[in-house]
Image 1 (cartoon, helix red, strand yellow):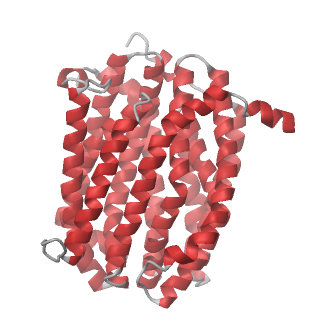
Image 2 (tube, helix red, strand yellow; image 1 turned 90 degrees about the horizontal axis):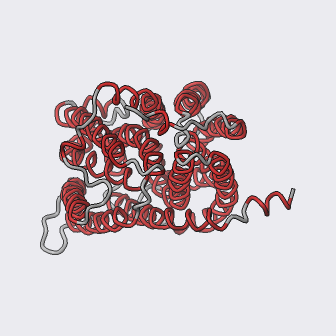
Image 3 (cartoon, one colour; image 1 turned 120 degrees about the vertical axis):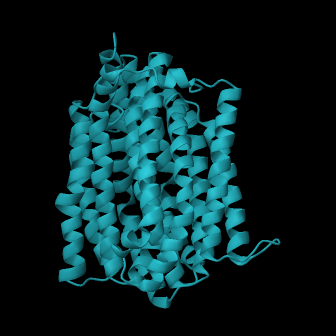
Length: 459
């Protein structure tokens, strides 16, 4: 057994490729998580209601991000394989489809945010003050949605070609600017007006607009592989669109069902009271900090597995997936221990009530225990199954299990047994355990390996 493990992790090429792709993404995610946590800390200085309001308003962006992720990761499984075959024209056609769908989705969420934000936020909370602050915030923040659609589409497709440094540099600069502007506009520093939580929304709009503009300028100035002309982006017919959408559709449905499930979790937390949703909102950025390494690992796995399937190296794709699963288990256990070490100083940054703080400590304990399971699920779904074109099983694993297991148990815990928020969160983890067991069996079966690029020949 020990010799098998040594053999499995003796491939230097795997680690070199993971390091090359994952490290810039890890750095980007670390900065994102750190600055996001600082943003919550800034807002948290205004009290529990402000934290709850901005957190609930962020649900609109959260849902849109998941819709974008479904569209873009569905497209990326094609672009990774096309890049493995050096098929640039088809890569650019898929990018064009991706942009069309992502911008359309942004338009729908923008309309909701502008015209009926109170209705949307009332799904999560009945606290009038939370809804009022949140509605004002999201009306301003929603102007970022169009910029996010364009930036995310280009960034994800660039990653599938192995170009990860430029998106990292641009995103880190944007996030740094956003944090500076948020701090200045929330509290009225450096000669800027004190706007409270509305300042955080204005900072986000300015930062996202600059991110999109700088990203596009550099891509086209230096002629990256994704620097497609308008004609190249729109050079697809119904036959091509149908062949791309067929495997993409389960991914989009996956993200839709999963995002609605996560939304239902947040509805449950919100209906448990302002303290419960405030607890979840201050633990969330700490979770993001713990996940930064594994987001990079999952993205690197997706690129490497997809490239190898596209190049006809299916055995290597299988082995690369297995190596990433093992790294996720070891890394998740280690990070769980580190979370326990740093949870008290991290939570002490938030100016919230003692009840919220105590609940948050208990929730971090549960996060620590189940971190390795959740890390593996992300790697299996995003890094392996989707990269292999196994989108139907991914839909079942990620989009259906949440409704069969997690949501019913969380609702029972909250409204029938009246458990505290951290025990309701423990009920949610039942979904993750179920997904992990089924996902491991699927990886071992090799039924997830589908060469999508070869199926597009002649179209």
